[in-house]
View 1 (cartoon, one colour):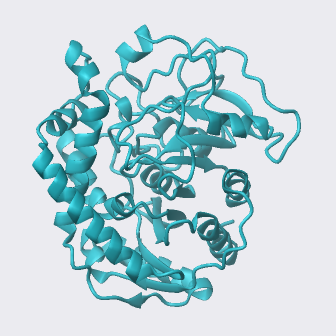
View 2: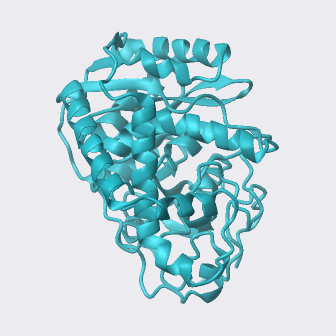
Length: 397
C-alpha cells in the first residue's frame, strides 16, 4: 500500500509487495526507503520514467547492496522518487509531483535522489538509498541539511541498479543522523583501522563559484567550525586543469556514457523525456569517439594530479554546492544556471572517483548549505568518522 502521511511527495504510490527483513542485526528497528533505480523483488524499477514504470516487469530479486541492508535488520517502507533516469540535479521530475524539501519547503530537494533525501529529512525513513553520478547524494544532502557521502567509485556493488554513466555511478545513502550513517558505512565497508586523514587544504579558485557575499561569509565560518578538528585548511596552488575544462570533461564523458546506457531504448520511440533530460541525452548522442579519447586523457591526468595532492593523509575542503537550494519556483533557465555552477564543484569527485563527504554545518537565507571533505580513494569510512567528530564538536551530531 502507499506510504501514509507522505506530505513531502517522497514516495511513489505503488502497490506494496511484502519485502522481508532480518529481525535482528545492526540496523534492526530502523526503516529503509529505496530510490527507484534499485531493484526490489516484486516491484517494477521505474527509474522516474513513465514508459519504464508502465511496461516494466517486477524485479525477480533485490539489488544485493539493498539486500544487505535488509539482512542487517532494516525494514523496507517504500520506493522513493528519482529524477528521470537519474539524469538531473534539481529533484523536479516532469512526470511526478515534486518532492518538498522539509528543511526549506520553498526550495528544491535536489536530485536525482530527491525522494530519498525528502524521506529522511522529513522523518519518514531512518535510512534511504540513493546514488551519485554527478552529485545526486551530495547536492540533495546539502540542500536538505543532511550528511551525504559520494563513495569511492567501485567500492560498493551496483548490481541490480539502473546504470546512468557507469564510470561515474556510485552507491550512496542518507540517514537520520551521523551515528546511523556510520552504522551503514561499517556494514557496507567492513572494519577499518585506517588513520584519519589529517592534512586539510583548500583551493581558493573554487570560491569564485559561490553565489555571493552571504555564501562566502558562511563558507568562511564553516571552515572555522571544522578547524578545531582538522586544523585551519592551508591554501594550495590552483590545479593545472581549469575549472571550465574539468566541467566540460565531466559533462561530455557523463553524457556519452548515459547515451551508451540508454540511447538504444530512447531511440525506439518517444519516451516522453522531460525538459532538460531530453536535451542532455541528445548532447550525449553527439559526443564522438575522438572526443571521448581526448577527454578521458584529461580525466586521467586530473585524477593523477589530485591523487598526488591528497597523498595518503590529505583532505580537500570545499563548498559542496554554490549555496542554498534554488527556489522551487525558479525558472528552468535559473535552475539550469545553478546546476552548471554546482557541477563545477561536484565534478572533482566524479572525475577522480575519490570519496567526498558533505556535512550540514551552514545556513544561508534560512536554508541549509553544506561543506565538503574530499579524501583519497578508499578513505570513505575515515571521512565519516572525521565528520562525526566535527558534528559532535559543533553540537550538530
